[in-house]
Image 1 (cartoon, rainbow, N blue to C red):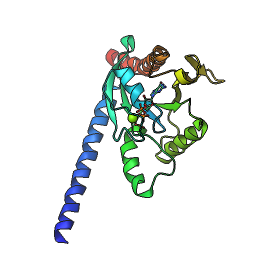
Image 2: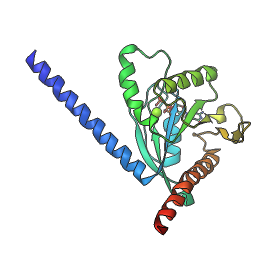
Image 3: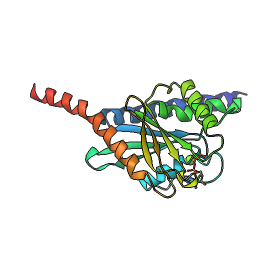
Length: 214
Ligand SMILES: Nc1nc2c(ncn2[C@@H]2O[C@H](COP(=O)(O)OP(=O)(O)OP(=O)(O)O)[C@@H](O)[C@H]2O)c(=O)[nH]1
Ligand SMILES: [Mg+2]
């Protein structure tokens, strides 16, 4: 029993250490004022495929539930807009077993720190609306419900829709229709991300100029 206690203590301190390292990394990123974007969405929506298509990285994508078990981040270069940090995350699902909720939430903590969420949707799924609602419910739970969110309607190759950027009544970008598999619409998303990154930089640039002149 004493040994078990030791082991628990060790694990706890390791966890604290990991939390601290994460915090340090996060703050380092924030200092550099790089736009951070997280891919979130129902399991099997195509997040990893999109992540790979955008970053040319080799994140594991497969037609199975929970192909991705942890968060991976990559730098994505967007020309004049510079670099942003893109993260792939574990898939969301409805009615997660209770024993898994804590681990799941811990993995998703990074997403809460993102500037923008790309909510990847399998637009060809019969349960599309149900999955969107389930993902948004989880986002609420982890405190990411009010982050700026753009829906990525993926898999348009399977629905015969055309690549498109859709805006809401206020003119804000609400949806991008694309196919991570065929690549159609990817350039639209890149453009959207560039615009957001430039807008994100603009006020910061203004601040540093003011400081320089003082
Ligand atoms: N037809 C079609 N299939 C796609 C597209 N994007 C992804 N897929 C397929 O959808 C399946 C799931 O893709 P993943 O990228 O692993 O999905 P994910 O959202 O990362 O899944 P989890 O990691 O389990 O949450 C794979 O079989 C992909 O090949 C697309 O644009 N069109
Ligand atoms: Mg994945």
